[in-house]
Length: 163
Length: 140
Image (cartoon, rainbow over all chains, first blue to last red; front, top):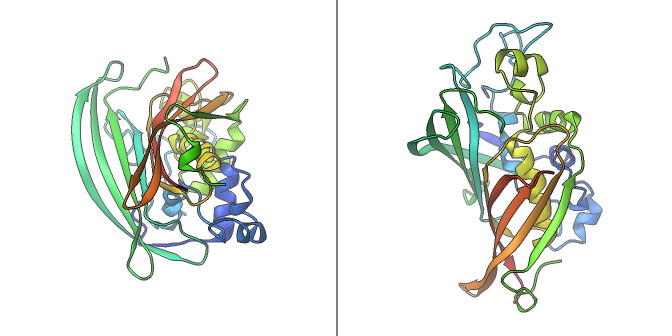
C-alpha cells in the first residue's frame, strides 16, 4: 500500500464492485447514480485497498521480467516476497476503514502510509503470532483527509490449520 | 434509502446471503480488481505444494468487500463513516456465506444521528469468517 497517487476511475470501481458481488447501480451506472443520495458514482467501502494497483512496487503483483514466487508448470522455488519469507505465513488479520467522505471517479487521491502498533501473542494453532498495524491515509486534491485505512497483518511461525 | 433513527431499534438485524457457492473465478476476479495477486488465492500448485494448504482460499478483503454490500444495502449509499472487521477463519471455494448486521446503538454526535452495527459473516457451517463493526449516518 505504498502507491503515492491513486486515480479513482469509473471502470475500476465497476470491476471492483463486480468482484465483491455488489450489483448496486451506483457503482456501474452513472445515470442511475445521479438519482441516488450521493448524486454520483462513489467507491464501494473497501475499494481503497485497490490502490495497490497504483503502487509500482506492490509485492503481491508479478513484475514484468522478474522472478515470481507463484507456480508455472511446477513450483518455481522462488522465495515468496515478504509473505512466508521466514518459513511462516503472513496473513491479513484485521482491516478498518474510517470514512470522512466517499470519493468518486475523476478524483486523484494522495496516500500517506505509516506503521502503527505492533504486538505479539501465543496462538492456539499457529505458534507465536506477530501482529503489526499499517496505516494508510487518503487525501483528496484539496489536501483533505477522506479515508483512513488501518490494516493489521499477522505472521505465524507455522501454517495455520484449517480447522 | 437511508435509515431513520426513529425507525431503528437496538437489536434490529438485517441479513443477506452473499453467495451459495463461492467460485474460484470470483476469487480471481477479486485478485484482478484489487491488484492482490498473492498465489495463495489462485495458484493451486503453489498453495498445495509450497504453502501446504488444502486448496486456494479467498482474500480476507474479498469477504470484507462482499460483507460490505450487506452493510451499504442496509444503511444506504454514502452513509458509512466506519467499517472494520477481523478475519477469523479462512473462506474456501464452495463456501456459502451469509452476512448479518445487528444494531448496537442509535446515537447522536454533533447533531448527526448515527447507528452503530455489529457485523458478522458466517459460512455454511455457521462458523464466523469475519466479524466487526460499522457506523453510519442516519436520518433523524
